[in-house]
Length: 243
Image (cartoon, rainbow, N blue to C red; front, side, top):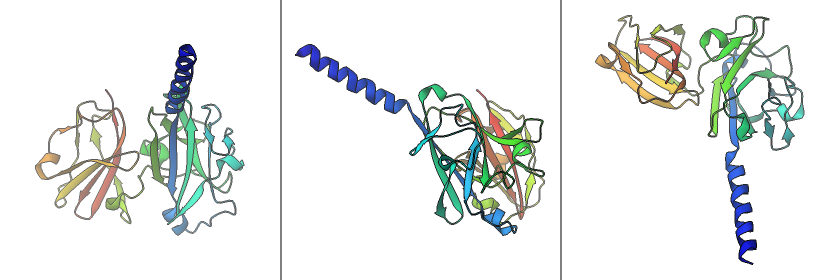
């Protein structure tokens, strides 16, 4: 009987560990600016396309397929306020793999990553050389929520860039491991923020703290967004932190 009890406990422990080993990434996109530009929302709403099957990605309804936004399991949910969302679960074996993806309006032909896209030059995507520009994500070991503005590297809800003309910000060195510097134009009082890819502000800076080396020794490796505000001028650039 004792051995049976121990076996049951071991099985339950293994099952719990297996469940915890899964990671869920919630992908969100803000299409406010996209619609304001005059584009109509397609009949099938916003979808997501990517190499999800390669990474064993799945939603509640079942497994996802590669590069098929028209598939039922690629449909995103309208949360209101022009925010769309989908939660994808991956097994532990997929942690560290590179997920390629992009947001799609209805189906291919009205998707991100076309001519003029800022995803690749913005630092959150890559151009495969054949005209396909995709967002990239190294699947983390913990569940994460990501939210981006359509066809941009701007995180959702970044108040300092809403409705503003965003300029290119020069950061150096980039990638950086312990500190970096940024260019100041001197056009009025300056402030800056550093956000992670979930839109969470991890650092705010102002005054003299902007004019020298800015320490990032406490930040984990990954991609962050640095937003600098000088008077009415807003500049932004991704920062790659390496360890």
